[in-house]
Image (cartoon, rainbow, N blue to C red):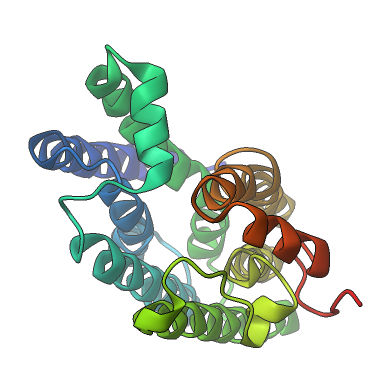
Length: 263
């Protein structure tokens, strides 16, 4: 690969790590590590802006892929910000659990956790780097296919997020499990469409040299969602807070793919 790729990687890593260091200071002050989720999402648009202005690729391709990243990242980050900022004084259960497990060195471990999030931003952005380095002055069918799948996935994720927010807004649903709309088919339709979005980025990047490397991103996202910080942590917290109601919900729904409903 061109040396300019490595320079762009370094620039983006410095910026993302710097942002997360500042976010950690804020989180330390307010004792709410949940703010990391907001800026993990916002870091992708930051990377897209850096690539748009500094990467040597074909202008129209950069416009399209960077617009996709910015729209998706700002939408998700703002959605999370609305959720987190409304209860800054109350840390989300997942992070409360980590705080307990990491005591008495929780704040130091959270600093490294935030930095790891910044590094994951750059690693997952591989499809963006690959696409923005491509100087071929025409878009390919793969790139149009990637855009169409991106549109479907971002729309699906937005619908799932809106349905959950609407459910939680109703005071009568306090303590209940959201099982309406897409949530009646899948326990995590938002995660499913988030993963599908990363598949769309990798499809887009396949039209460029070294595009096969972009497949790393959806593979990592899928592993994280299914095995690490996504579904396992979310469901453990749901069981702690909702108990048997959530266990019954688990028995009637798909864990991930929202295309069928258990009878």
